[in-house]
Length: 213
Image 1: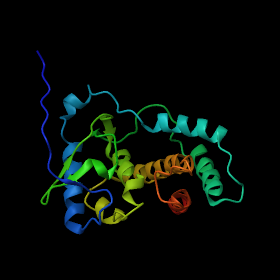
Image 2: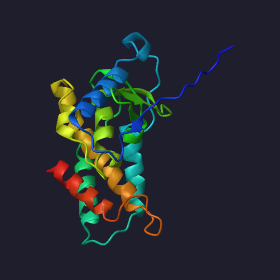
Image 3: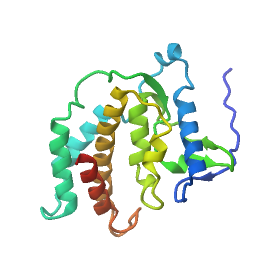
């Protein structure tokens, strides 16, 4: 009979910490190890992870139909720019992208990456599945946990990955998509019980506009 064995991982979450060069390198190594953890022959049989681009675009379509922010707000302007970009991005094209598949953990929250003093260990595989490097890296770099407290050095982190030209192009588009998703999510934050510091949605608006530039 199949059994599940659990163990306790020692380490402190990277979220909310000032991440130094050594920890960035360890984070990149942990992510790269995950991406190659499933052999290609077996990966073909692994279901696509949830929350891929088609699903996210459907969410954006639904959110934009019911979102009403002041026309003069930075959030509204960034949303409009993001939606205009998305309409001509081609990301809604059916089928999987023409880049190599990898195993994706499915959650970019740095709280799931634990620093034990020498290496980074990973928890939470609830939404794991078949994915690609560009999408998974974008999910980490654009997750609110990567910048709301102590910003992750994104160029240093991405510099540890030898991406193909196709992956580099897709990474740019996936970062824009994830940034737009986060702009909507942060704009829904309850002002009476906020999950993030005041002004986070406005900061995200600036981040999205910078990525779209």
